[in-house]
Length: 467
Image (tube, rainbow, N blue to C red; front, side, top):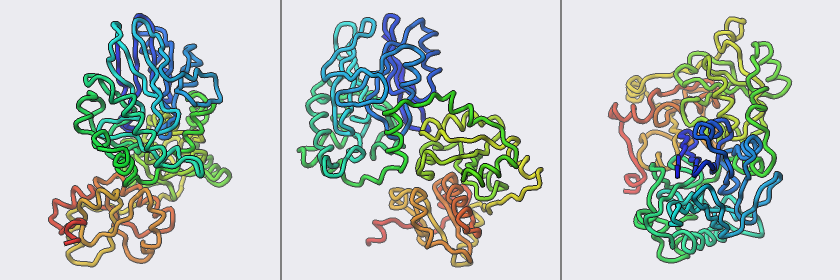
C-alpha cells in the first residue's frame, strides 16, 4: 500500500495518490492530469478511481480530464449531482482498490454532498481518512458556502457538520491518520494549522471545534468570525459540477504570443485586463499602464480569485520570460480560463515599441521612517484584519487588500498615499489597483510591516487602544 500527499503550497491544497497491487486512486486532483498519470505509469499501476470529497469552491478539479484519459470512475458522496458521468456512492459503500478498501462516509456540513474516505488496510483495519473540507488540522470546514436562501442556513450546515464529526469521524480509532484537503492559508477554514496531517486522537485534544462541549457551542464557535468568501468561489463550484475543458485546451489560447499592438487591441476590443505576474520590485520600475500586479511567486491563484471577481474576465498577461506556461496553468487551477495570450518579449518589447510605461515609487522602510518623523503622512495598511489587530502603526489607516475597492474614498488624489503590507507582495498589488483607478500619487513601502518595525516607529494594537 502506498499513500502520497501531493501538497500545493500556493493553494494550500492537498491531493492524494493511493496505490495497492497495481490499482490506484487519486483524491481531489488539481486541474493538470499528467502528473498523476506519470505517477501511476512509473509504478506500473492503473488509475481506477478519481475520488472527490465535494464540489470544490477554491480550485477547479482535474477529475473530468483525468477520468477521460485513464478510464477511471469519478466518485462523489451521496446527494451529489453532476453534468458528467460519475458514480454517486451510498453512505458506507466500500470500494475495492487492490488489496485495500476505501469506505465512503457521508459527512455533510461543509457542503451537503461532502464525503470522507476511510482507508482500510489489507487486514481491514482503519488506517487513515481523507477528510476533504470536513476536518482540517486545527479546524473544520466553513459551513457558510452551501447555504441557500430560504432552505438551509449556515447554522443548519454547522449542525450537520457537528453530527458528521461526532457520528462518523470521532468514533474512529485515535491512531487513524487525518489527511485533509487544505492547510494554513486556505480560505476554506479560519484556524488551520501549518501541519498537513495528524492523528485523529491528537486532533481531539487540540482542535477547538472537536473540543466543543455541546452542539450549540460548536455551532457558535465555527460560525463566529467567518470572513466573506472570495467572489470566485461559487463560480468554481459551478465549473466543478460541469464538463470542464482540459488544461491543454485552455493553454492553446492562453499561450498565444502577442505583440504590443495585439495586446492593445484585445484590451480595447475585448475589455481584457492586463495581469502582470512579475515580482513587485520588478513591476514597480515599469509596466503597461492600468496593469494589475499579482506576483507569480506568492499566493498567486488565491489573490487572483480575490481581486478579479469574474472568472470569465478576459485576461492578457505579462510575465518574466519563460513563466508564461506556469502563469496560465495556475490561473486555470482557479477557473480563469479566458487568458487571450501573453506579451511576447515582456515590458522590454512594450517599451521598444515606443509605448508609454507607468511606474510605482517604492522606498525602503528606513526612508519611510525618516519621512514619518518629519511629515504627517497618509499611511494605509493593506494586511488582513487579524494582522492589523495584532499590531499596526499608530498613524496607519486600515484598508485590507481584499476589500480595497470599498476604501477608495479614503485615498487622496492630491497628496501621497503610502501603502504597506506584511512584506511587500500585497502592497504592490494595492498600488497597481490604485494606479488603475486614477490614484497616481502612490508610494510603496518595500519590505512592509516587518521592515517598518525594525525602524522603531511606534505601533499599537486593539488591546492597547482599548486601554
